Length: 58
Image (cartoon, rainbow, N blue to C red; front, side, top):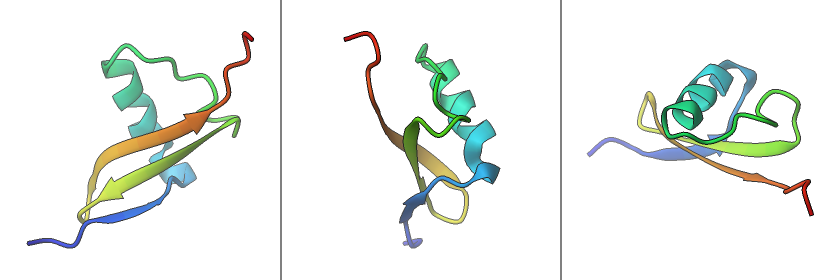
């Protein structure tokens, strides 16, 4: 079984993060400006993304 790791997304991951969010109808605000924190799960290649951000409309 491959080793699965979780790490903070780097600038090299941002295209991947945006593509997953867009493909699932989710907003991409905050991906590049640092207002949200994203984490990548990988087994050699990225296989998933998780993120945390603030809602600014409240």
